[in-house]
Image (cartoon, rainbow, N blue to C red; front, top):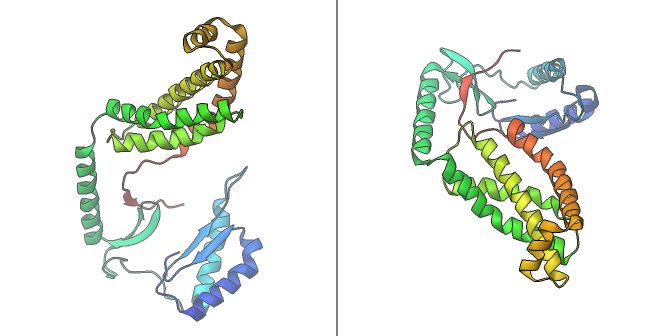
Length: 260
């Protein structure tokens, strides 16, 4: 909720009222800032209903009127009240006049154009992800072999390194980006598990060549590898869901706000 600059007394009144009615309003957390109030609804098994959010809005409107907090009916950039509209600015609600909207939109267009010009291609990003995943793969193997602990949890760190590597090598951000990261993740998990099995055999006294041969021929080694791969993929599945369906692109967004 965007407001004019709030006084300390207004902040105290708002905080008291919100804490008193928190259970009925069904929000999880809130934070009062100088000129806005941030609310968080935690969604576990079910989504937050629109009417629940509207109930909070209605409560705040009444509270703001009682505290003489002025209505937001002017451009948040130049403060004119002529030809204004409601917009979504990178998932933040904002009021802009037509002039400020076109200026901001043109600015975003130039920023995006410059960013795309600096990007290379998908292959470069893929190579960057592979290179940056190497430290994670090594850490995975060392953790599993010398601490004798299942290191599948390292998939989270490897994914983080792959995302950094993709950006560092200036890989292209497009529709295929998330699929490339998932593919890199699968490759890294397989490599990490292969190295772990071979390193474990070497630790038990085999030479590297013999360990590689045993990995290819020993049913016991294959069974251990298969079990570890299955566990790794199960843990990684949640990360893949996040990459494919939840993680948002870094594109700048300015568009008319949706009306519910």
